[in-house]
Every structure is written in C-alpha cells, then in structure tokens.
Length: 464
Image 1 (cartoon, rainbow, N blue to C red):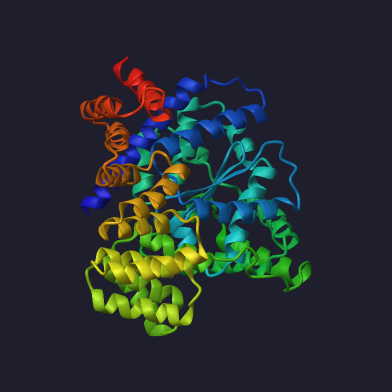
Image 2 (cartoon, rainbow, N blue to C red; image 1 turned 135 degrees about the vertical axis):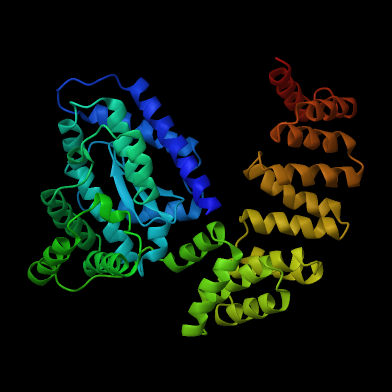
C-alpha cells in the first residue's frame, strides 16, 4: 500500500511538471491545423520530460529489440515525414500508446503479458497506424478550444493509465469534459487495425498475433479486478475482435512467423529480474517450472531470484539445470559466475566468468566481475586490465572508477590511484574528497601527462 501511495505521488509530480512545461513551451494555439512541426515539438518535449523523470527503461538490448521490430513494420509503409522513436516505460500497467511526433511507448507490463513476438509486433503495428493516419493530431486539432495545459494533462494521462492514474487525471484536469478525453473513436480503431494488419503481415508476421493479443486483454478484463489501462485509450475491444477476425478470414491467410527478431522470452525474464522483487519472482518462476520443469527461462529466473534471497544450494541447482538445457547461454553462465562470486566462491566464479567471456567478450558485467575476481585473488595488474576495458566503454561507471583506484593503489601507482579516486568522488557528488584526490594525484603525476590534463580540466569546472 505504501508503495502504491509513493507511486501516486510520483505520478502527480510528473504530470504536474508536464503540464507546467507544456503550458510554457506551447502558447495557446490558434484554430489552424495541428502541423507536423507542432507534432514534432509536442512529442519531443513530452518524451524528454518522461526521460528526465526516469520512467524509461534503459536496457540497451531490450530497446534495440523493440526498435528492430518497429523498423521492420515500417518497411511496409512509412508515409509519416518524421522519424519514429520506440521506448519502454517502467510500469506494471498493461498499456501501449502513441504521442504526436512519431513516439510510441510500451509498458513493461504489456511486454511481459504477450505470448510471442507477433503479438508484440501487432501492438506496435496498431500504434504505428494511429500515427501514420494522424489520429492523435486530429483529436488534438479538435481540442484547440482548450488550453495547451489541459491538452498536456490529457496526453500525460494516457501513460498513467487507469485506476490511480485516472484519479490523478481527475484532480488535474477536472474542468475538462469527458467527451474531450483522448480516446480513439471506433473509426480510428478500425483504420488502425486495418493499416496495422497490413504492416504486420507485410513484415512477415502472422496476422493472428494482433487478434490473439486482444483476446488476452479481454480475458484479463473479465478475470481481473482492475481494467487494463490499454482499454482506457483503446475502446471497443469486442468490436475490434470481430473486425480483425473478419479481416483474417477474408483478406489474410493464416501464414507468417510468430518470431522473427527473436529473444522475447529472455527480455521478459530480464524485466522480471530488473523490476520485480526476488520473492515475487520466485513465485512466478516456480509456478512456471511446476507446469514445465524444463523451462530454461524459468529455471534461470528462479536461480537468480534464489541467489538474491540467499538460497544458495537451490540457486546453484537451478543454475546447473538451466545450463544443462542451454549450455551455450552466455547470460546464464555470466549470472551463475556473478552469483558464485557474491557467495565467496571466487575460484568457481572465475571459471564460469571465463567461460562466459569466451562467448561474449564485450559484456560489461562479465568484464567487471572478472576484474573483481582477480582483485580478490590479489592480482591487481590483471584486474586493472579488465576494469580499464569497462572504463574505456563507459568512463562514468562509478564502480569501475572505484575499483581502478583501489587496484592502482595496490600496485603502488599512487598518481593513478588518486586520479581515479578523484573522478569517482566527482561522479558521486563529493566535491571536497574529489579535489583532495585530484591535488594529491598531481603531486605524483607528470605535469604533461594526459591524466594531469584531465584533472586540471575537471578542477576548473569544479572550482568555477
């Protein structure tokens, strides 16, 4: 309950911020058409504010996966003059929506609900169609008798979804009539389904994926106490199911792939591990294993969750079983190695991480924990080589800066040790400590060294 209250407060703050920003950024519009340039400005501002509020999932591989599906769908027909941006919002809500300017958002709850990639692609195809047909722009153009602040509240309300989100919207936009809420009309939905189906099948997916997703949503509506937020912005679900069934029977053959890009089950596992609690995840993955003892994703997810809960023997057993079924899976191998390291079994962890490194040499966590293993084994030179690799890719990684400082100290290279401590404390906002280490580093480093130059530049900005 406390978590829900915090969530509501956070959403109120974000929504209020969006309303304020939009009101300042966009003066009251005239009754002229809502242009593509207007769409671009509004959509970009909305995206930036959601990003600043830390609501977007930063998992690079997941974002690439969603983007690949979206780009594949766009090869069929892209009449829209602006570029598309596909993003994932961190929320257990079940929703997807489009905003002006070619921005499409999926909730993590929706990604975890779909059963295959064609269903996910069907959702994206439908949202792409809303943008291609300019449905959002049409609704906004009709709403121009309202202030831009109210309009911003309506758009922001879309991503808040139902339930508590609706209550928040009510408190911020109570003056707006129900008829002006941004819900698609039946005509909008039919056109988006028709166009979306052509994008979906044209990209090589089985068109049944779009229909299957709606049936899953309808099932959740009937058997859940909460209405999935997708229905609040995408009404007439039963009508859509009837219309899509007719399309599949009369225009599209039951062909096409359920998976093209591939990897959805792993991304779903990762989302559970990133945002679910270990206890909840143990329940979810255990239930799946009860239904299928050889479910690799469930075994993997359960092993990680058990490790986080301190259930060491059970975790190891499930890691081993997952690797028996999928011996070349670098992520399972890596996470088994990390789990072993955190349990203090450094030698076994090193063997696992080396095996993972042979499969995926550029992964940050593999490199970082190899460094940790060698650091623990008192081999600082080898540890430094791995930490430097991570630092080259991500110079701002705080943990890497810290461990570089420690290991250079262990080799007696005090200038470099203080150099990295300085940047570590600068990154963590401890200015006094950073300046102390920078000044100490300059006492040990050559005046014309690149590191001394880096320090002087950093100190100029800190002391200004």
